[in-house]
Structure formats: C-alpha cells, structure tokens
Amino acid sequence: MEKIVIRKTNRCDTRTLPSGSVVTEEAVKKDTLYHIEAVKKCGNAFIKLIKEQFSHHDYTKLGDHLGEFTLGLNKGFDSPEMDKWYEMHVTTERHHLKKHVPDDVNLVDVLEMLCDCCSAGMARTGKVFDDDVPDEVLRLAVKNTVNMIVSSIKVLNDERKENLLNALDEIKDGYDAFFIGNKYDDNNTKNTHKEQFALLSKELNLPLDRGALAWIKCEYDCYYKGDYEDETGSAFEFVRNLILKEE
Figure 1 (cartoon, one colour):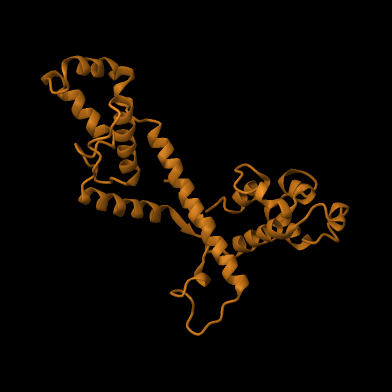
Figure 2 (figure 1 turned 45 degrees about the vertical axis):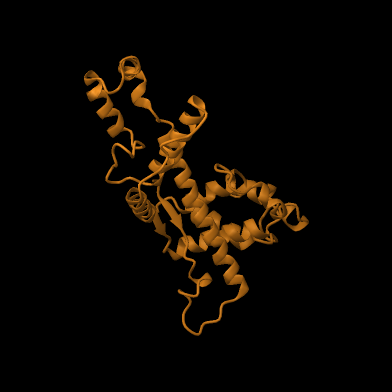
C-alpha cells in the first residue's frame, strides 16, 4: 500500500481532548475535515491496491500457461499431469482462500475471492456457490489489513508544513479570484489572502505570475470549490504534493 500522510485530529474526539479543555466549533470543524480527508486518503490507497491486484486476476491461465489451462479443461484438473500447474495456480494467485491462505492474507484477497465466485457463478451457471470464507481466515485478513494500513500512515508532525497546509486550506476555503480587490491586485498588495500567497510563494519557491499558484490566484473561486475537489493533478493538488514531498 502506498504511503498515506495525514494530519493530527485530536480536537474532535473526547478520548484525546485534554481534561478540562474547551474546544471551539472552528477547531472541531477543522479537525473533522482533516479526519474526513484522512479517511478518503486511506480509501483511495485501498482502491488503488484493489485495482492493481484485480487487474492481474487469473493471469496464470493465460500467456505461457494458456496451454496448461486448456489441457486441464479438456482432461480435468484432477488429472495427475495437472498437479504442478494447479498447485502453482492456487498458491501464486492470492484469492484461492479455500485452497491456500497466504500468511499476509488481507481483505483485498477476500474481496477478490468473492468477486471471483460471484462473477464466475453468474456468468456460467446463473447462480453462486462456494462463497463462504472461514471465520479464522476473515479474522486474519482483518488483522493483516489493519497492520497494512497502519504501517502506511504517517501523521504529519512538522510545524512548517502544517503552516503551509493551513495557508493552502485558507485559500481553498475563502479565496475568490474574481473579487475586484483580488482580480486587479497584480502586485499582491491588497489581496484578501496576500499573506497566505506570499508564504507559499516564498517557502515553495513558486512564482505568482505563472504556474500553479498563479492559476489559483487568478482563476480560483471558493464558492465553487466543489468543482475542484479531489482532482489529482489540479493546482491545489500540485501545491499540496510539493508541501508533502519529503514525507
């Protein structure tokens, strides 16, 4: 699983709030949004893992193995001459959990098995069978998946990067490039978010007259920020990746 960088969210959970402290709605909102972002990052990393594994489903039936698979269909996979191929097939591909359970079995393997059973059954006989997963395999898969996610997470603990991310968030949440004071503020002196832009420009060595930061300054409208959400490769994503580059 790819690395997942998330931010601290101790202000939206009673278990991590300091005793006797009073938390503001603004702080709760900010940490809750950080938490939502973190869950989305974990989910996206998991989706990527699923796509990668599923794209190789049953690869041991094709290519150099097509002849062996075809022979098994014609002669039966219980034929002695199929033993070597069949053993390779069920142990190499991780989703054959009735035949072989990898030590690091995870929920991606379980999901691939279920998708395999359902799609094969419906396409070949019109019904699904042999779809149960032993309890001990599910427990191990959950445990390994938790360990996999935890080992991929890095909680940001860098004041400089936090300040840069906060500046970017403030622009995303409240900046309107078409507000007259911003639209004609070529020198970034009257801009509503001039301090945030100046900080990002200085710390990331990004110009304000071209490139990602310039696009945000001249084109971004926070009132339509939903149109810009989760666009990998967008100006905000580019700047955010620069901030987190060394994590």
